[in-house]
Image 1 (cartoon, one colour):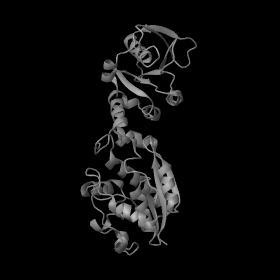
Image 2: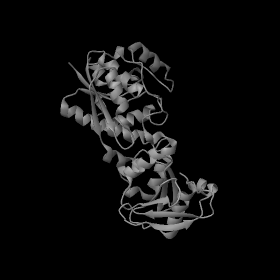
Image 3: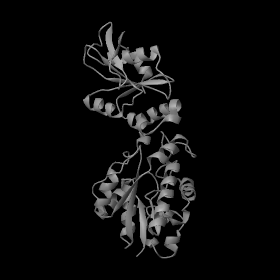
Image 4: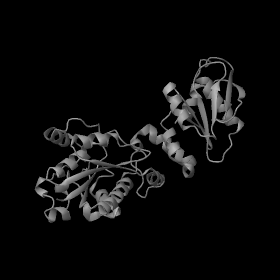
Length: 331
């Protein structure tokens, strides 16, 4: 029996592609990649729904480095989809060879995304993956050149599809026909496509790309972010949940600010690698803490701050930051 490895993002397209091939009597195993920008939960649910096993590979370090300078650039936000797909297929191809699979499956649909899934982009991904002759795209196969798997009879080309364009109606109809009833919206999954997250990531890469690691990426999802200077930014929590999330991501070099006599937001001052916060940066972070506290209407507020391992707090009196000022700083 032929064996295929199906790349599964957790979306509808990839599970349909896997199911179409599995229904031809081919043994299909799902393969999901996770990194700092996307996880595996949706893929786990979708693989279970069509009853196929799933492998999960964490390639955070390599993927993070690629996003800093992708060969083919970014999409609408900070998503380097062409480079990302090629990287995944290269990884998948190595696993295919090591574990005795015959070919790879992806759920890509021709022209669904104008920049990363046009004909030229799909060809680029195949070529740069290093496994050009082993990649099958079942949902758009009838609009593409036959692969060696189809020409050899391993896969029945007549049972493949010719989806083309942005509309998802054909996929939804096929899902109903195949009994796939639960699937995520097409917008979910990758943080790199989310405008708010992408804006924060772009700012991070512009100011401290070389030192950015997984913890910096995780921190982008917490609280309000303010770019104070080229060397420093502040993160302000909005609730108890974000406070806990911030403390899980605190590093020893950060300064932590709280109002001394009132409840309110905890603010972290994070500097670029090796930079020691200036008096002006400290004052700005303290003013943010004062603004998002019960003392926001006061003329002057006492704010305490220290590094996580320091025993004693320093104190500073500041005027709460004005909303107009913060609007210009907010990421």
